[in-house]
Image (tube, rainbow, N blue to C red; front, side, top):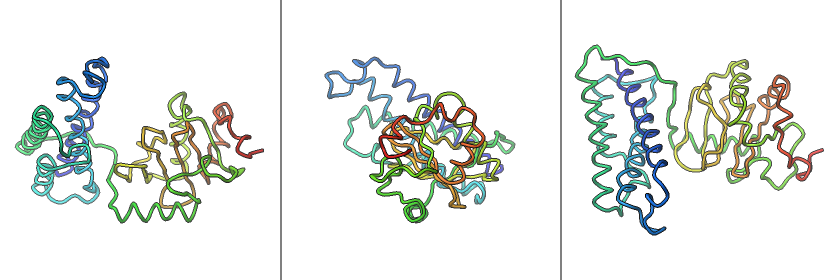
Length: 274
């Protein structure tokens, strides 16, 4: 069995499982989540611990570099280790018996999948886009680079800095990356520049190196910063409903995206831009 097949299958399963469980939790009525505004209902406790532990397992699985995988037996052992012991702040005690059982069940489901795939010598699955969790040392180096090159301060960039927004910084509304074809336009510019991979640094949670086709500069709870190893562009999605671009990415969007002006953030002038 190709070790890449086990890795791709694990990533695909955990990603789909996480999305499924989040949908199930979102479909619960508000009074089905919290019985009195403070305490979760039993039904809610059977769901949300599951997607938390699935997310923790996915992060562990994605610490492996799919460009440099060890043999299939080692990969399988690492997938099973993730199933057994992957944790995050959201999976730590205190939790009650219902929550503990939900997480244990989810761990067993993933472990059973891994063992089933390993038992099939001819098992095949489609490739997954590249996505790897950065090491703490890599994350720290990238954050230092963004601070030195682009003036990022405490994880913030324009327009949230106190200084005026520079002329060459493009600030759009956050909706531009959710509506229309904003993300496609951003990816297109980077493809044309020959940039296959992007570094993603989040306000909290894991940081990643990922394929440009997975790059989406959106605010999703944690703020986000993005760049690549050329250090000549930056993107920043903020909690204030803005997404800002600098460097060659800003220039490329202005030059080639016909609708870019319709998405400009209306707070430009208030922050000193003319």
